[in-house]
Image (tube, rainbow, N blue to C red; front, side, top):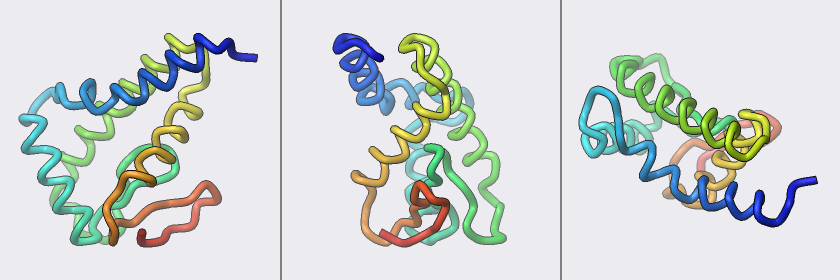
Length: 119
């Protein structure tokens, strides 16, 4: 059973994810996030139930951007999991739930059962 402090640290780390993920390792983070937003609006990518971006169409022209974002997210999830002593998959699932709540209408989201729907 996690302690109250562990839960608070976990929540704070998830909340701070946006700042951590913004570091980027190639493209400027603002540029990358703007491209991703456009891909989501066009329905090319969606947010899966693991807290990662996933292609929804055959158009993979922005694969490098999506791969870079997913790599950053995976790295952050791994570090959060290590610090909070939870499974990486749990961190990703928690982040996916948070993203689903915050996401704009019209974006593809994958529920916990693996079914896709537009918000």
